[in-house]
Length: 87
Image (cartoon, rainbow, N blue to C red):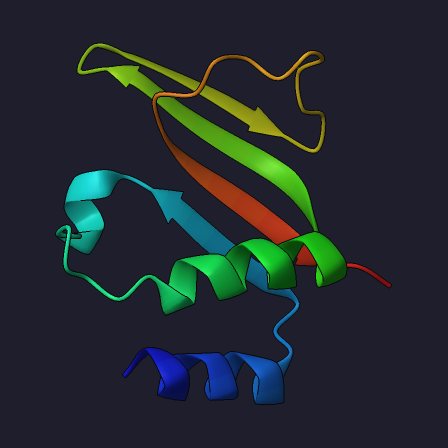
């Protein structure tokens, strides 16, 4: 399933991708295949810029950044990156 997703994304070359760094959303286990995560790190770095960030620090505190990311990047809790394809 991971290989199929990689092929579909490579083929579609979407303008935007969403990267979710919330451990519970992936239900990852120690024996889980990490192919999609290694591929995504490389692929996003080569072809996309992060243009938005949702940083979920706690149940009661979430920071939102769009178009202008904070410098330096804050410590991340659970997060969502909004990525736009480089021109």
